[in-house]
Length: 222
Image 1 (cartoon, helix red, strand yellow):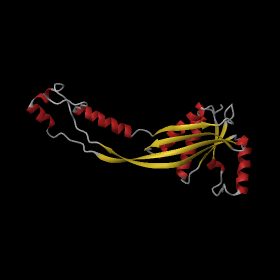
Image 2 (cartoon, helix red, strand yellow; image 1 turned 120 degrees about the vertical axis):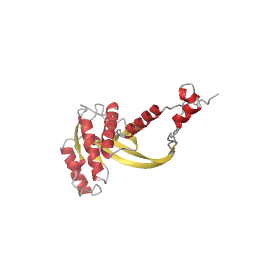
Image 3 (cartoon, one colour; image 1 turned 90 degrees about the vertical axis):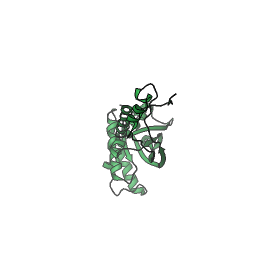
Image 4 (cartoon, helix red, strand yellow; image 1 turned 60 degrees about the horizontal axis):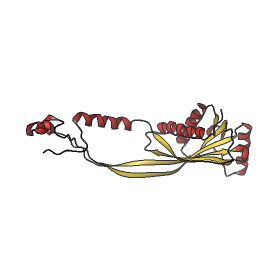
């Protein structure tokens, strides 16, 4: 009797599997919502003109997130603005005079809501990726049933050893505040992102996920 294995790979199957892994690793970033909350005070008709404010000291990340969110919401018929275009570089939200001046400017521009985004946590997880070997049970492949057939096929076969890899996990919080109700929080969403391939890829995936969640929650008004 020859041994049987629950999972078998031929050379071609292994090559295709490795190609698939490489292809997937080059794909865009995946973002998913882990939870949302909507307050009873949210406008029944939703919001049409929203100011986007990314709370980050990283100017590049802030620019990317605000730009991509604005584009994603615009596709849903929403009029948006970006805090980078409205807030001066030296704006201090803890200064009451500056804060009031900005509040007046936002109101005069006609915005009825503000959408904020912020990174609330980042984690690293190390996991072990087991090695791989090509197996095929007899009689699926004729070469397996004879010594020279098996020896000739398996000679020089490469075994891929296991290794450790570290995953980066980012947790972001997105809040929607109603400016017609003294800036009251009316919606909040938490998202999770694994190993973003790039800032650009993350920005687009994050923006689509958040804008879809807002639409599904009835927070957007065309």
